[in-house]
Figure 1 (tube, rainbow, N blue to C red):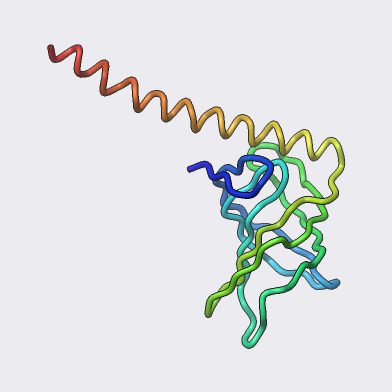
Figure 2 (cartoon, rainbow, N blue to C red; figure 1 turned 90 degrees about the vertical axis):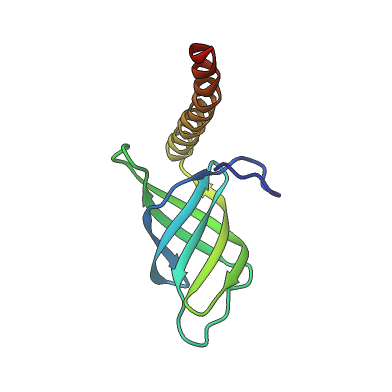
Length: 133
């Protein structure tokens, strides 16, 4: 499902592991969605830790099918926590042009495939209804 909130762009569902560098410390995380301007990331929560306030983080990840490791800088814009995980909405603030273009193209293709799937679902029942008549 595509989502659009206060963001300037769309996000597409994507679950990949990545490396987040916060305060010179490596933290492994799992994305739930990504877009050209940011992502949502979940990490394990250390006992008694609080969600970070606005913080700059480094990100290292590989988009499926690209074979290219993307390095980006981001700012945590939203954070929430439960007993086991920290969730963070991250806005990209720095990325090489090549990586930004790769990410934009990846998201556009994923959105295109998602919308085509929805259209096929709409068209298929109509075609079946005509065949039965």
